[in-house]
Amino acid sequence: GQSLEQPSEVTAVEGAIVQINCTYQTSGFYGLSWYQQHDGGAPTFLSYNALDGLEETGRFSSFLSRSDSYGYLLLQELQMKDSASYFCAGRVEDSNYQLIWGAGTKLIIKP
Amino acid sequence: NAGVTQTPKFQVLKTGQSMTLQCAQDMNHEYMSWYRQDPGMGLRLIHYSVGAGITDQGEVPNGYNVSRSTTEDFPLRLLSAAPSQTSVYFCASSLGRMNTEAFFGQGTRLTVV
Image: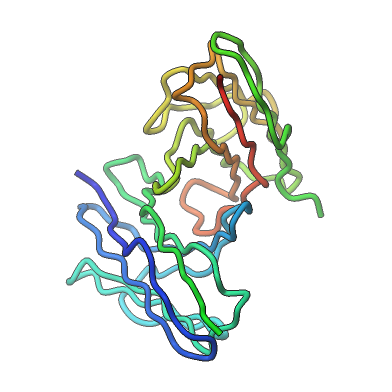
């Protein structure tokens, strides 16, 4: 079946760098998106990788390797406001190009 | 800039009741969708629409109906509420089906007792 796997929780220290991984098992994959969701809030778009490689947006970077069915979100210079859940989502041909979502990674930041 | 507006934000229903969750967007987006989010799970697609007059089922459509009479509005109807439908519901929109960035409403927290 189609699925995206992410760790359920990651802990890091303020000011540090953290990587959140996402692996997928699906065919007809059309790129990987990342969303941030604060507790009680709505998901907000962070980044998208259509092709292999690294995309950088300020303190956030996202990477995709299609050959390894793997991607990650890299957060640098962590701030307390980055405490949130992060979701990877992939657009899959078999699901009529709808987004398939991972279960989310809760990022806990300690001072 | 209103973006995507969902109402209500909170709702408690009794088993068997029906209700409509409202969703409206002012960005002239063609693609709209409804998701439910349960604890420890990602978003699951209920129904979606690629334009006015066109709707289709997602991953978990049972117990829900949708319609898209205008580009702006995409209401979700619960036909006969069940406790299993207790969840947080999100409406989202994007320029098109293949667009990478989806804009979400603030969510509706629904409890069925």
